[in-house]
View 1 (cartoon, rainbow, N blue to C red):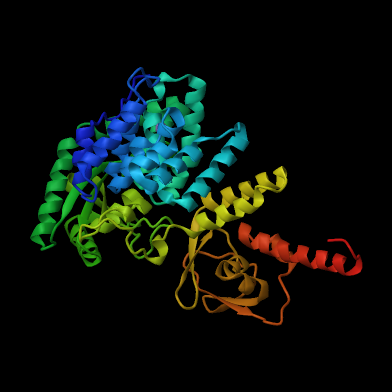
View 2 (view 1 turned 180 degrees about the horizontal axis):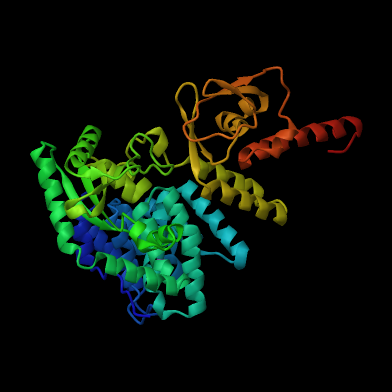
Amino acid sequence: MENTSATNPTIDTLIQLVATYDESVSGEQIRHAYEFAKAAHADQKRATGEPYIIHPLATAFYLAEMHLPAPIIIAGLLHDVPEDTEKTLDDVKAEFGEDVGNMVAGITKLGKIKYRGIERYLENLRKMFLSMAADVRVVFIKFADRLHNLETLDAIPPKKQYRIALESLEIFAPIANRLGMGEMKGRLEDAAFRYIYPKEYEWVNNISKSGRQGKQGYLERVIRLTKETLVDAGIPNVAVQGRAKHLYSLYKKLLKNDRNIARIYDLIAIRIIVNDVADCYAALGIIHSRWRPLKGRIKDYIAQPKPNNYRSLHTTVFSEDGEIVEFQIRTHEMHAVNEYGIAAHWSYDEQGKIAIKALSKNQRPPEWVHELASVQHELSAVDRKKYLRSLEEMKIDIFKDRIFVFTPKGDVIDLPEDSTVVDFAYAIHTDIGNQCTAAKVNEDNAPLSRVLKNGDMVDIMIDKSRKGPNPDWLKFVKTRYAKTKIKQYAKSKISGWITGILPGSK
Ligand code: MN
C-alpha cells in the first residue's frame, strides 16, 4: 500500500498558523514547547524511521487547523513526553504550568488501555467518557494524535494496523460525530477505511476520482456563476467553495443506493457561506430562481438542526447544462460549528479573545458525558458482568441517533431514539419520573409507553401522593437512566421490607 504521507508541517508553519487566530501566547512559547519535546524525544524514532518529533508536531498542527487556542497546541506538542521519555509530568508542569500539565496528564491516562477484545473496546469507551467529562480538550488532542497515527500506519504490523483502524472507526469517529466534529469524523473514517475494507476503499476511491475527473472546469464555472449571482442580488460577504464528499461516507451512501453512483448527488457539493440566517434563506431563493430545484431534495437543517447540531440548508438543482448539483447554504458561524463542532466554541470570538463562547442550550458540552462518567465511577466497583452490561447500554445511549423533544415551556430535551414518555419524564427530573401518571403528547392524551418522535411536545402529569415508579415500566423504557432509577426504587422497597422483618439484615 502506498504511503499517504500526512502533511509534514514545520514548527514555523505551526507558529504562523496559530498566530492567525490566537495571540494570547507568543510564538516563542510554542517554539519552547517544541524544543522541549524535541529534546525529550531526541533518541526516539517513529516506526517509519523518521524522528519522533514529527508526530507531536503533526498532532499540534491538526489542533491548530481547528483554530484551538495556543495552550491546547502546546499540550499537543508535549502529549507523549511523560509516557515515552525521561521527562516527567512534574517537569512538564514546572515548565508549562498547571493547565497544560493537566491536559498532558489526561492524554497519558487515556493512553493506557490494558484489555483485549470487547473488554478493550468498552474500557476505551469508558475512558473517553471520563476524560471528556473532566476536560473535553483532552479528547481533541486524542483525536489529533489518533489521526496522525492512522495516517502513518503503513510502517507497523498488519494486525496492529487493523486494531487501531477498527478502534478509530468504531469509537473515535462516532464520538467525534456526536461532538459535532464533522471534519475530524470524516478524516478519521477515511484514514481507517483503507485498512478495514481495503477493496471497498479502492472501489470508492476510483469512483470518486472518476466522478470528479473532467468536472473541475465545470465546477469552477458554477462556483463563479453562483458567486456572481448572489453578489449581484446584494448578498454581502459571500464565500462559495466546492467540497468533495469524504470517502467513507460516500461508501455508506453507495451501499444504501444499490452501489449506483448516478444516485449520489453530493459527490461534490457547493457550499455557500453568508453572514446571517436571513441571507441563507435569501440565497436559497436566489439559487432556486436561477436553477430549477429537484423535488423533495430541499432540507432545512437550520429550522431543524441534526441531533449533533449540524445546521445548513441543502438543495439539489439542475444547474448549468442540466447537470445536477447540491448546494449547502450556511452562515460563517454555522460553518465553523459544522466542521469543528464543540471545538469551534474554543476558538476566538469577534473581539479577538480566546474563550469558550456562551453556548446555547443545544450546544453545551453534552450533559450525557458527565452523566455517564459519574455513573461509571459508581459502577466500576460492582461485579464485572453487570459492569459490561451497563457499558453496552451506555453504548446504545450514545450511538443511537438522538431526538429532540420539547417541554410545554419550550425547553429542549435530548433523548436517544425510541425513548418513551417515561424516559422523557426521568430526563427532566427523577421526581417527575417517579411520580408521572399520565401525559399529553402534542396536546393529545398518550400512554406512558408512547414512543416519542423528534419535535414532539410532551406535558407530564404527576401525582404527588404517588410513592414511586411502576416496575412494569422496565418493559418499555429505553434510557439507562430511567432503568436505573426504576430498579433502584424497586430494590429500596424490597430491602426496606426485608430490613423491617429481619432485624440485623441489610
Ligand atoms: Mn501520540
